[in-house]
Amino acid sequence: MSLVNSTKLDEANKYEVEVNVNKETFAAATIKAYKKQVKNINIPGFRKGKAPKHMIERMYGKGVFYDDAIDDTYPKALADATVEAELKAISVEDLNVKEVSDEGYTFTAKIVVAPELNVDGYKGIEVEKLSTEVSDEAVEEELQSVRERNGRMVTVEDRPAQNGDTVVIDFEGFADGEAFEGGKAENFNLKLGEGQFIPGFEDAVVGHSTGEDFTIDVTFPEDYNAENLAGKDAQFKIKLHEIKAKELPEVDDEFVKDVSEKDTLEEYKEELREKVAKRLEEESEKDFDNKLTDALVELATEEIPEVMFQNEVRDMVQQFEMQLQSQGLNLQTYLQYTGMEQGAIEATYRPQAEKRVKLRLVLEAIARQEGIEADADAVEAEYNKLAEAYNMKAEEVKNFISEESLSEDIKVDKAMQLVRDNAKVK
Image 1 (cartoon, rainbow, N blue to C red):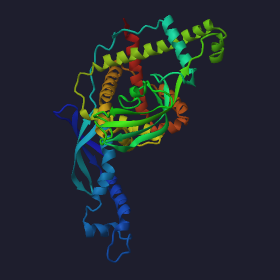
Image 2 (image 1 turned 180 degrees about the horizontal axis):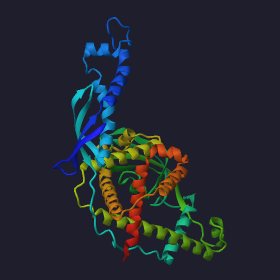
Image 3 (image 1 turned 135 degrees about the vertical axis):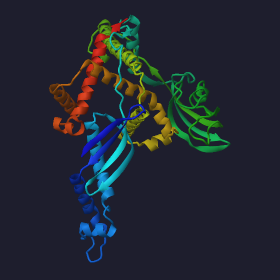
Image 4 (image 1 turned 90 degrees about the vertical axis):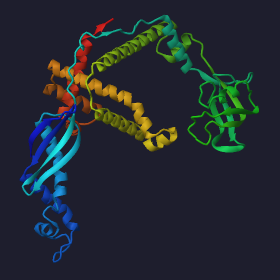
């Protein structure tokens, strides 16, 4: 198999390659096709599955096994040709086979390639960094957060329900005088003020007391995911069994001993100050990287093939599907629950996909322009790191991730570090 020629087309990021599959490779593929098909072929005078190859060709034509042989050989031939032509193929268009015979065959294909950007201005990017100064107010907020987490729910009997309370209720919903599916529950715990239910429901429960039976009127939103209820007026019959409120502990030395290994409130506040400082530092670094990323994406001003964005969206949707499967769901079930369509999911990922593609191309350009390489030791170290992360052997990881792919990732990471090191903090 060999590359005959490679031609740059007038369209941006497109080439046409002409590839030859030689006699020996094609002959081996036709024999493979014969062995696969012979068991289903009847030839008079021979038992089914035992007819010689030349007899089948005589009866059905010389090219009876050509199509299968071409399907078997062209993917590798095309992949080898793009490597030989030093092209990074993204997708294949208009594959055209010609000159097929026992001597082999030739085909042409239009391929879309990843653009090699030329970028400037990636050194000295000015970025304003978030402050990491820890205020006394931030420490108090952290202390109150710990206090909230250690609160306990107590039954309230001396007042009506209010926002922030959790009420235990029975309810049944009616639309047009008829009970509707999914509109009934018993001993349901509902925290008021969080907007878990349709607008107006929780507000209508506020002010009622334990033991009350009452009816509330609400209207379902126009975009409600159940079409039979969208925009409709409804009534809910409610029985309020219990009102519960969170009782917070006193903040003193005893509280500190319960929630930490410190002995005094002052010691604990210092611990919280260190915790807040670490979080602010992490948030600042993340924000710093995000701002650098946004600046780098703006450097991708050249035309980028649409298929690259589509491929990235597809990969992101597939990753989302895998996450759903780990939770015992599938994409179709998720779409039914949310009332979304496949196209809406893809549209959600589109902006992030565009950003990822542009950032990758820019960083690849920086690595190329700066002569950044990934040596064998760095590649092996990364394989070992991945093996440890996935609890696998390094050799097993190599079966899933090619050395070329890993090298590119390392070069991109080094390029990003170069950008960080040369950034100017305002």
